[in-house]
Length: 283
Ligand code: PLP
Image (cartoon, rainbow, N blue to C red; front, side, top):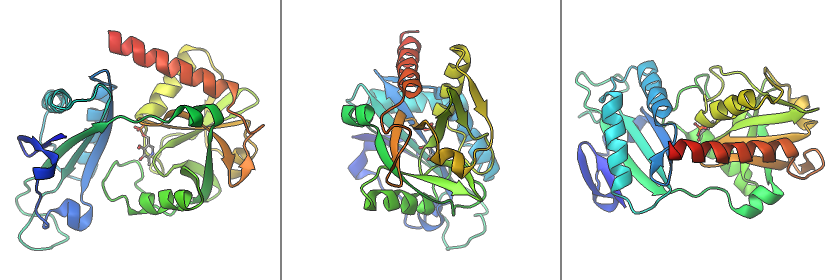
């Protein structure tokens, strides 16, 4: 596939970055994953805005204006073969001549984009729901930043895979935060619940879309802190992300969620999400 590295479009297997790059040595960088449907990037402005916000928080000057980012992203999409893609974008604080935790005097950021075919969950996962495990959220206290230092997220995801599950649902101090690479929603007595944005979770683009859809369709919902015990007695549990969209969780730690089947509100939300995608793509 075709990628972009520091101003050049080139085959991915020819792209080279220095081993002195701070993205490699320290995980010092920011990233985004943008879903592309029928060659249209979904919620592009929101992804570019979240990147801007992460870069500002880690004091890494944004190398591009929003219109420049949009142009590069569109070019990467055009140069790849798939109709539906997942565009990965990363900005690191570049390479220095010595390994030094402190920022280089002159920062030349490394800008990298690549694209893969977008793979959304298979039909059997939507129809049956997926199994998840839970774990204590041992990540740092800036989970609101989309940075490339993802070791904790990798360990937490592998914890699920090792048990034949797809995702780990995280609790911190007795409260739900999110998944290792997703946000979590639950339903109790017809009300959709999800935790409020804070430094303890990533402000998901899909999370925002789901809440907007709940508002526009008049679905009862509350954004508030959720106790672990409430999650364990939920009628429905969903995970949301740009690539998972809205996916029902039907088992948690080997116990059925609700009646063990995908629930009606999750299926409704998934249908609204598909409609929304389609209307945005056509406009
Ligand atoms: N939370 C974490 C930790 C993530 O890594 C992700 C994205 O993969 C999400 C939530 C969902 O965010 P989005 O809906 O923007 O893909």
